[in-house]
Length: 253
Image 1: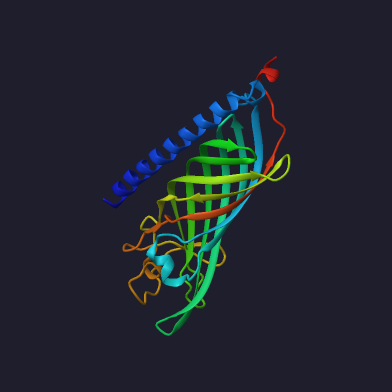
Image 2: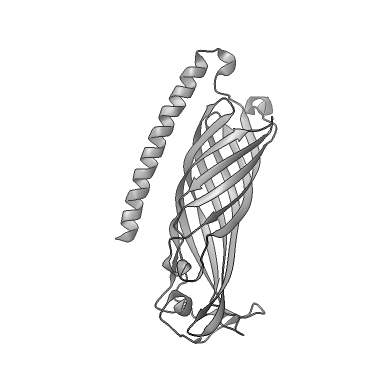
Protein backbone atom coordinates (compact mmCIF):
# COMPACT_ATOMS: atom_id res chain seq x y z
CA UNK A 1 0.00 0.00 0.00
CA UNK A 2 2.82 2.39 0.92
CA UNK A 3 4.60 1.62 -2.36
CA UNK A 4 1.42 2.26 -4.35
CA UNK A 5 0.98 5.64 -2.67
CA UNK A 6 4.56 6.56 -3.53
CA UNK A 7 4.18 5.52 -7.14
CA UNK A 8 0.99 7.57 -7.45
CA UNK A 9 2.73 10.54 -5.83
CA UNK A 10 5.67 10.15 -8.20
CA UNK A 11 3.38 10.09 -11.25
CA UNK A 12 1.63 13.24 -10.03
CA UNK A 13 4.93 15.01 -9.38
CA UNK A 14 6.30 14.08 -12.80
CA UNK A 15 3.11 15.22 -14.51
CA UNK A 16 3.31 18.62 -12.82
CA UNK A 17 7.03 19.01 -13.44
CA UNK A 18 6.91 18.03 -17.09
CA UNK A 19 3.79 20.11 -17.63
CA UNK A 20 5.54 23.16 -16.25
CA UNK A 21 8.72 22.46 -18.19
CA UNK A 22 6.79 22.05 -21.46
CA UNK A 23 5.31 25.50 -20.98
CA UNK A 24 8.76 26.91 -20.31
CA UNK A 25 10.28 25.21 -23.37
CA UNK A 26 7.50 26.49 -25.60
CA UNK A 27 7.93 30.01 -24.25
CA UNK A 28 11.69 29.85 -24.63
CA UNK A 29 11.53 28.49 -28.19
CA UNK A 30 8.90 30.96 -29.34
CA UNK A 31 10.83 33.86 -27.87
CA UNK A 32 14.07 32.81 -29.52
CA UNK A 33 12.51 32.17 -32.93
CA UNK A 34 11.30 35.76 -33.10
CA UNK A 35 14.87 37.03 -32.77
CA UNK A 36 16.46 35.21 -35.68
CA UNK A 37 17.81 31.92 -36.93
CA UNK A 38 20.98 32.24 -34.81
CA UNK A 39 18.85 31.94 -31.67
CA UNK A 40 17.04 28.78 -32.74
CA UNK A 41 17.59 25.62 -30.62
CA UNK A 42 20.97 24.08 -31.36
CA UNK A 43 21.30 20.84 -33.29
CA UNK A 44 24.79 20.24 -31.90
CA UNK A 45 25.53 17.83 -29.09
CA UNK A 46 26.79 19.50 -25.92
CA UNK A 47 28.84 17.16 -23.67
CA UNK A 48 29.88 18.14 -20.16
CA UNK A 49 31.31 16.77 -16.93
CA UNK A 50 30.21 17.76 -13.46
CA UNK A 51 30.84 17.39 -9.74
CA UNK A 52 28.10 17.39 -7.14
CA UNK A 53 27.98 17.70 -3.37
CA UNK A 54 25.02 17.85 -1.03
CA UNK A 55 23.16 16.35 1.89
CA UNK A 56 20.14 14.16 2.62
CA UNK A 57 18.06 13.29 5.66
CA UNK A 58 16.54 9.88 4.68
CA UNK A 59 12.90 9.19 5.43
CA UNK A 60 13.88 5.96 7.20
CA UNK A 61 12.96 6.24 10.91
CA UNK A 62 16.06 4.26 11.83
CA UNK A 63 18.28 7.04 10.50
CA UNK A 64 16.76 9.63 12.82
CA UNK A 65 17.16 7.33 15.80
CA UNK A 66 20.93 7.76 15.85
CA UNK A 67 21.89 10.57 13.43
CA UNK A 68 21.11 14.15 14.36
CA UNK A 69 21.95 15.80 11.02
CA UNK A 70 21.67 14.98 7.29
CA UNK A 71 24.53 12.98 5.86
CA UNK A 72 27.00 14.23 3.28
CA UNK A 73 26.81 13.17 -0.39
CA UNK A 74 29.40 13.71 -3.12
CA UNK A 75 30.08 12.44 -6.62
CA UNK A 76 30.23 13.34 -10.28
CA UNK A 77 29.42 12.23 -13.78
CA UNK A 78 29.07 12.90 -17.49
CA UNK A 79 26.19 14.45 -19.43
CA UNK A 80 25.11 15.10 -23.00
CA UNK A 81 22.54 17.60 -24.24
CA UNK A 82 20.99 18.39 -27.59
CA UNK A 83 18.79 21.43 -27.61
CA UNK A 84 16.51 21.35 -24.55
CA UNK A 85 16.84 17.59 -23.98
CA UNK A 86 19.64 15.85 -22.08
CA UNK A 87 20.82 12.75 -20.30
CA UNK A 88 23.57 12.04 -17.79
CA UNK A 89 25.11 9.32 -15.66
CA UNK A 90 26.48 9.81 -12.17
CA UNK A 91 28.17 7.93 -9.34
CA UNK A 92 27.57 9.32 -5.85
CA UNK A 93 28.75 8.39 -2.38
CA UNK A 94 27.58 9.24 1.13
CA UNK A 95 28.65 8.58 4.70
CA UNK A 96 28.00 9.52 8.31
CA UNK A 97 29.21 8.33 11.70
CA UNK A 98 27.78 9.18 15.11
CA UNK A 99 28.26 7.87 18.61
CA UNK A 100 25.51 7.68 21.22
CA UNK A 101 24.54 5.78 24.35
CA UNK A 102 22.04 2.93 24.02
CA UNK A 103 21.05 1.21 27.28
CA UNK A 104 24.18 2.59 28.99
CA UNK A 105 26.41 1.25 26.20
CA UNK A 106 28.30 3.69 24.00
CA UNK A 107 27.91 2.68 20.34
CA UNK A 108 29.37 4.28 17.22
CA UNK A 109 26.86 3.91 14.38
CA UNK A 110 27.87 4.28 10.74
CA UNK A 111 26.10 4.46 7.39
CA UNK A 112 27.69 4.56 3.93
CA UNK A 113 25.94 4.62 0.56
CA UNK A 114 27.05 4.14 -3.04
CA UNK A 115 24.74 4.79 -5.95
CA UNK A 116 24.91 4.63 -9.73
CA UNK A 117 22.30 6.87 -11.32
CA UNK A 118 21.11 7.73 -14.84
CA UNK A 119 19.03 10.82 -15.57
CA UNK A 120 16.93 12.19 -18.39
CA UNK A 121 15.71 15.76 -18.38
CA UNK A 122 14.45 18.72 -20.34
CA UNK A 123 15.44 22.29 -19.63
CA UNK A 124 14.36 25.81 -20.39
CA UNK A 125 16.86 28.64 -20.72
CA UNK A 126 16.79 32.37 -20.09
CA UNK A 127 19.96 34.32 -20.81
CA UNK A 128 22.68 32.66 -18.68
CA UNK A 129 20.20 30.60 -16.62
CA UNK A 130 19.01 27.06 -17.29
CA UNK A 131 16.19 25.23 -15.53
CA UNK A 132 16.44 21.42 -15.80
CA UNK A 133 13.47 19.21 -14.87
CA UNK A 134 13.63 15.44 -15.09
CA UNK A 135 13.83 12.06 -13.42
CA UNK A 136 16.67 9.83 -12.30
CA UNK A 137 16.82 6.10 -11.69
CA UNK A 138 19.52 3.72 -10.56
CA UNK A 139 20.95 1.27 -8.04
CA UNK A 140 21.78 1.94 -4.39
CA UNK A 141 24.04 0.06 -1.98
CA UNK A 142 23.71 0.77 1.75
CA UNK A 143 26.15 -0.43 4.41
CA UNK A 144 25.36 0.01 8.10
CA UNK A 145 27.47 -0.67 11.17
CA UNK A 146 25.47 -1.33 14.35
CA UNK A 147 28.23 0.15 16.44
CA UNK A 148 28.77 -2.44 19.15
CA UNK A 149 32.07 -1.79 20.96
CA UNK A 150 34.73 -4.27 19.94
CA UNK A 151 32.57 -5.80 17.17
CA UNK A 152 32.92 -4.93 13.49
CA UNK A 153 29.36 -5.87 12.50
CA UNK A 154 28.53 -4.44 9.10
CA UNK A 155 25.56 -5.35 6.94
CA UNK A 156 24.97 -4.53 3.27
CA UNK A 157 21.73 -4.05 1.38
CA UNK A 158 20.91 -3.18 -2.23
CA UNK A 159 17.92 -1.67 -3.98
CA UNK A 160 16.52 0.17 -6.99
CA UNK A 161 15.32 3.78 -6.77
CA UNK A 162 13.66 6.40 -8.95
CA UNK A 163 13.38 10.09 -8.24
CA UNK A 164 12.27 13.33 -9.91
CA UNK A 165 14.42 16.44 -9.64
CA UNK A 166 14.42 20.13 -10.48
CA UNK A 167 17.30 22.56 -10.65
CA UNK A 168 18.68 25.91 -11.65
CA UNK A 169 22.05 26.50 -13.31
CA UNK A 170 23.93 29.73 -14.02
CA UNK A 171 26.76 30.13 -16.54
CA UNK A 172 29.59 31.87 -14.69
CA UNK A 173 32.13 31.73 -17.53
CA UNK A 174 32.08 30.47 -21.10
CA UNK A 175 32.42 26.79 -20.13
CA UNK A 176 31.86 26.85 -16.36
CA UNK A 177 28.49 26.84 -14.60
CA UNK A 178 27.20 26.52 -11.04
CA UNK A 179 23.83 25.10 -10.07
CA UNK A 180 21.51 23.73 -7.41
CA UNK A 181 19.49 20.50 -7.60
CA UNK A 182 16.60 19.31 -5.44
CA UNK A 183 15.89 15.60 -5.80
CA UNK A 184 13.51 13.14 -4.12
CA UNK A 185 14.60 9.50 -4.52
CA UNK A 186 11.97 6.81 -3.91
CA UNK A 187 13.24 3.34 -3.14
CA UNK A 188 14.37 0.91 -0.46
CA UNK A 189 17.55 -1.07 0.11
CA UNK A 190 16.81 -4.65 1.13
CA UNK A 191 19.04 -6.69 3.42
CA UNK A 192 17.39 -9.91 2.24
CA UNK A 193 16.89 -11.69 5.57
CA UNK A 194 20.60 -12.39 5.51
CA UNK A 195 22.29 -13.22 8.85
CA UNK A 196 25.72 -12.87 7.25
CA UNK A 197 27.88 -10.07 8.51
CA UNK A 198 31.31 -8.74 7.64
CA UNK A 199 34.33 -8.92 9.93
CA UNK A 200 37.04 -6.28 10.08
CA UNK A 201 39.02 -8.46 7.66
CA UNK A 202 36.16 -8.37 5.12
CA UNK A 203 35.37 -12.04 5.74
CA UNK A 204 31.78 -13.20 5.50
CA UNK A 205 30.66 -14.64 8.84
CA UNK A 206 27.41 -16.17 10.05
CA UNK A 207 25.84 -16.16 13.46
CA UNK A 208 23.51 -14.28 15.74
CA UNK A 209 24.78 -11.03 17.24
CA UNK A 210 23.71 -9.47 20.51
CA UNK A 211 20.33 -7.74 20.47
CA UNK A 212 19.52 -5.14 23.11
CA UNK A 213 16.32 -3.70 21.66
CA UNK A 214 13.88 -4.31 18.82
CA UNK A 215 15.09 -1.63 16.41
CA UNK A 216 16.59 -1.54 12.95
CA UNK A 217 20.10 -1.17 14.35
CA UNK A 218 19.81 -4.42 16.31
CA UNK A 219 17.82 -6.57 13.93
CA UNK A 220 19.23 -5.51 10.53
CA UNK A 221 20.15 -8.64 8.64
CA UNK A 222 17.61 -10.61 10.63
CA UNK A 223 13.91 -11.31 10.08
CA UNK A 224 12.38 -8.17 11.62
CA UNK A 225 14.08 -5.18 9.98
CA UNK A 226 15.42 -5.93 6.52
CA UNK A 227 14.72 -2.69 4.61
CA UNK A 228 16.11 0.84 4.59
CA UNK A 229 13.93 3.62 3.15
CA UNK A 230 16.12 5.93 1.06
CA UNK A 231 13.41 8.53 0.48
CA UNK A 232 13.90 12.14 1.48
CA UNK A 233 14.99 15.35 -0.22
CA UNK A 234 18.57 15.61 -1.49
CA UNK A 235 19.92 19.16 -1.77
CA UNK A 236 22.99 19.40 -4.01
CA UNK A 237 25.39 21.95 -5.47
CA UNK A 238 26.70 21.29 -8.99
CA UNK A 239 29.85 22.48 -10.74
CA UNK A 240 29.61 21.93 -14.50
CA UNK A 241 32.38 22.16 -17.09
CA UNK A 242 31.26 22.16 -20.72
CA UNK A 243 33.27 20.15 -23.25
CA UNK A 244 33.64 21.04 -26.97
CA UNK A 245 30.36 20.65 -28.85
CA UNK A 246 30.08 18.54 -31.96
CA UNK A 247 27.65 17.99 -34.80
CA UNK A 248 26.90 14.34 -35.70
CA UNK A 249 26.65 15.30 -39.38
CA UNK A 250 30.27 16.37 -39.40
CA UNK A 251 31.31 13.04 -37.88
CA UNK A 252 29.55 10.89 -40.47
CA UNK A 253 30.66 12.95 -43.45
